[in-house]
Image (cartoon, rainbow, N blue to C red; front, side, top):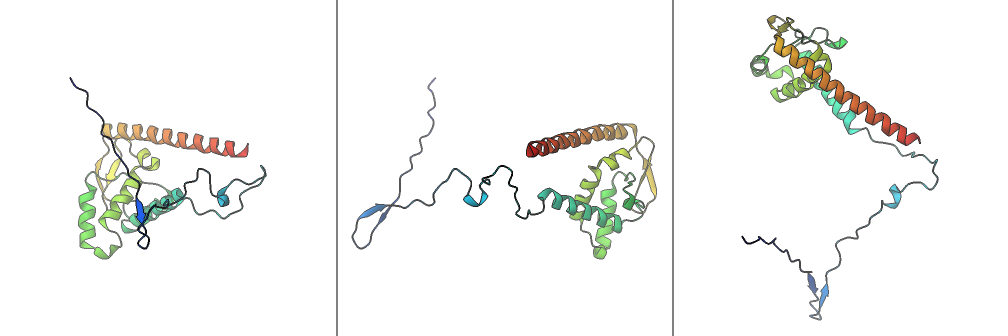
Length: 187
């Protein structure tokens, strides 16, 4: 068998032609590439000097705030589903609540929530450890009007326990990384 050769890419330097003299000159470089940080971002000369510039809010904090806002909007739109939302307590939602919510939002376009916002809020809620902890076998599930509809089954409860352990593991990793970063900064 013959070996396939890799394609060869040839890049030619562009040249500029001077219209007056007719001579060609090499094109100037587009920009100078530096390997270090800009002077404004360079580390201070003294090791104990601290950065005194104002820091913009962390992107993660803004994302968390948006998630909290979506959850609060969801709880205000459907107050009967989670009457103790302000205390951080959730109740299991019924299987198939998506269709009920879509019908409600279509019937009440002035409710302040779009279906896309609802989907984002539900992803935030169901990925929280507090919600997963409330999914215990035999616990009633509720619809958007706060009425019990069905119960949590054994496989669903087992899956929720698995999710709780995964969420805890992620939280532990995040906490360890944060502590390591703080420890490294103090040294």
